[in-house]
Image (cartoon, rainbow, N blue to C red; front, side, top):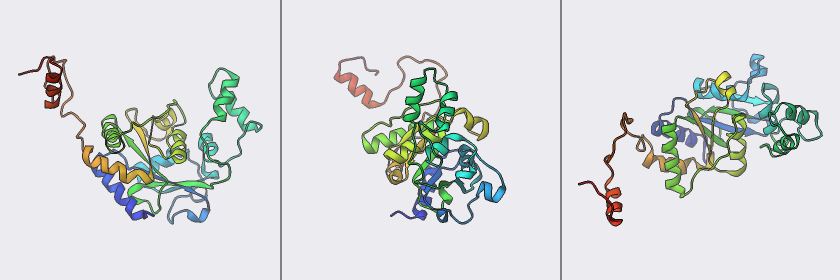
Length: 266
């Protein structure tokens, strides 16, 4: 099994190839309290406070902190449900309350949505721990990269280069802490998520940021692609300031147009 130090090295390589504005964040599911790394912050136990999960992630990606989030540390309902930390089913009071405020007009559609809401088995995990990948004292289950649109292009080209596949995602306007984590844990696929309003309001997320989620076991694959397409190789030196007809093109464009007997610049 890959060691924590190997993952810390992956973190250093990601920083070098992408130069994100915050640390890539490592996340590990906890089955026992004793798995919490030494020195990790326990919000309720150590500080007498609670955080939403997006805030714990922000403390890792901006402040370099390691934060363990057990049931009593959370201040937002969605991760409690999705990480299986509280009881949640159709006959439970919580289901009815969430359905009431979820924001879907049709009652049956609301119930169907909640039945399909991404979540792990109730009681299987005691919580999770988040840390900057370059400092993580554990082997993560997944890694979150908060990137801008240009950096995301580098990532997407790298994934396509290594796999021949495109990254697919489903999008919601809320619950980014859920959609950036639970589906990735369950299916082992890359995913894109937009930070939700709560992340912007409470956890320092920027409007231009996008979350790219990578299963930890696929970081080596991702880095192999970024070694070819990272470092801004998919970016333009200067944005266009006007619409230019007959703009300069790569040579293979000209070769294609000659093959099709179309106009080619001299």
